[in-house]
Length: 151
Image (cartoon, rainbow, N blue to C red; front, side, top):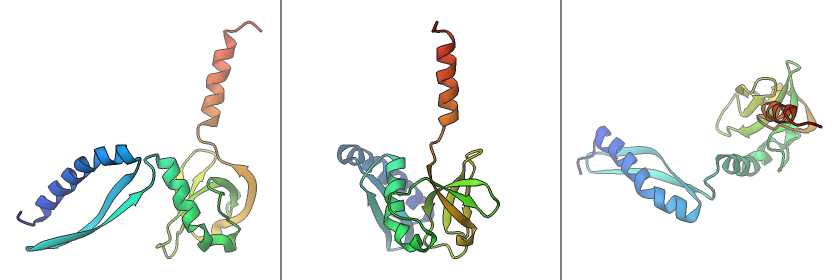
């Protein structure tokens, strides 16, 4: 194999395709990182997560990294916990970028579902509520379903 940027792009695609049956069989997600190379060799880091569900992976990542943010009041099991931001709006904490120097808190604004990253000082007050995506949409669908029913 001639090690070039193009051949490594093709390798990455082939690797992903080769891993698909194993991911399905073992209910895992396999991901390779940046590839370092020279004409004679290449290397990469491989990460295997114990789930294929993005929500479960995000929850597990949250619980693994939350100890670094306990000083803000976050604890294990608080994935998607709603907090009040410095601007007075409600946000749900969805993760942490532990390598970020300034904007480590990953969050979703409750009012419109927009996703942001913020500095630690943005968190003002943690509530006892959890964020449920598409709840309003589900309620509208349920309301439409019941309009046709005679009660």
